Length: 53
Image 1 (tube, rainbow, N blue to C red):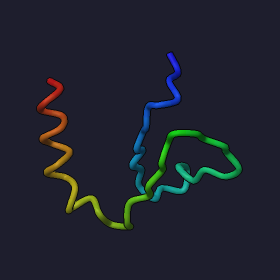
Image 2 (tube, rainbow, N blue to C red):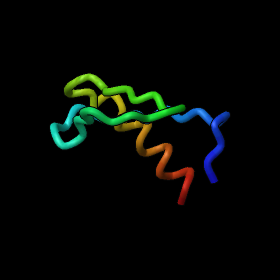
Image 3 (cartoon, one colour):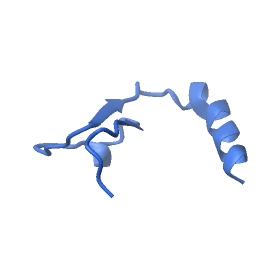
Image 4 (tube, rainbow, N blue to C red):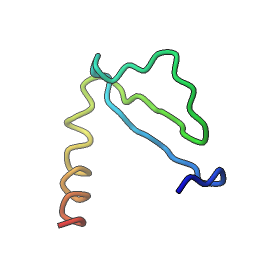
């Protein structure tokens, strides 16, 4: 169900396949992560995965 009051933050890495061109999106902010940030975010990834298990 679409609600215009919802706000979404989409974090994606800088993989070429994730490049978004000419797309109109509303209530969604897309943030591209820096290159080679995996070593900094890997611990965070593990904590998030453990939370959902």
